[in-house]
Amino acid sequence: MAQHSKSTGTGIMRAASQAPFLTREEEHELAVRWKEQRDESAMHRLASSHMRLVIAIATRFRHYGLQMPDLVQEGHVGLLEAAARFDPAREVRFSTYATWWIRAAIQDHILRNWSIVRGGTSSGQKALFFNLRRLRARMMRVPGSHTSAQMHEEIAMAIGVPQRDVALMDARLSGPDLSLNAPVSDDDPNSSSERGDFLVDEAPLPEEAVGMSIDSERRSTWLHAALNVLNERELKILRERRLKDEAVTLEALGSRMGISKERVRQIENRALEKVRRALVERHPEAYLSFS
Image (cartoon, rainbow, N blue to C red; front, side, top):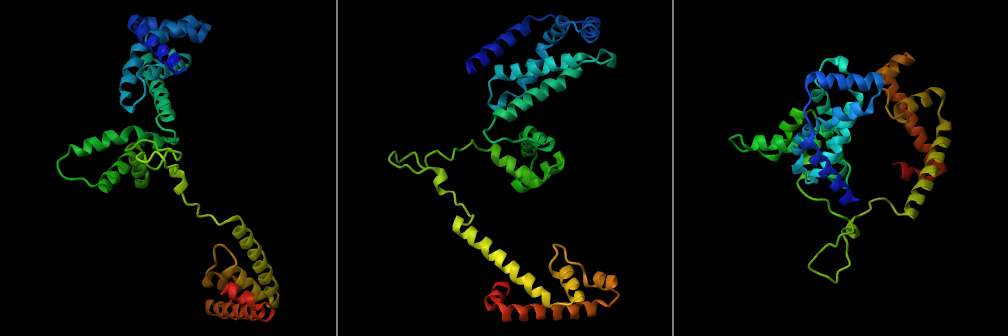
């Protein structure tokens, strides 16, 4: 499969050198024939005459470690997409329009194949991937020392992404992928240890998870039973102040209930004490769980 892809890309490169140039008038005529008559031969002729553009753009991305014929082939896909979508009424040269499609196709191919870990899924991450090395190299040429943190901060501001994303991408670009199934040491042929063997799972064991779930349900039952000792106003204050994800302030709750915030505090403290007393009387072990 890889050999077929390479030979296909090589064939495209060879054909590109033999493709004739088009005048602006010829280009416009072919585009009109495709748009109005769906003449596929016109569309393919329009595309093939711009294969030199594909090669020129693909050359800019050759330092990412992928085969040049593969980059050219992917760029050719983008070129065909541009030819199929081109509108001659826009009054722009086809090469100007096609450049974006070619570059996008090549960049997507690089992001899919550069690493086994998928990256560059957002526009900001994509811009970071393709500009990080260039910006870092430009900063290194400026006299004066730059720490990694300083460079990451400047690059983050230039591209418009968080600084932590720059640091993470920099680390990814600085080294190759490492398999978790790779041996820990190449020096000991008798060792069967793999990197994955030393990863620590911090999640609780199954029996611990079940135990915590049961304990949580038991404490919840105890608490709801203890709340029955409260009157309506005490229960309302305790729910608003202690049992919601975002507690209501004393001042806001007092204003809503028509009392001072100090009075809300007093009722809240009294309600808490009544709940604690009920828990201790009914379930002594429950108090230890909640304290």
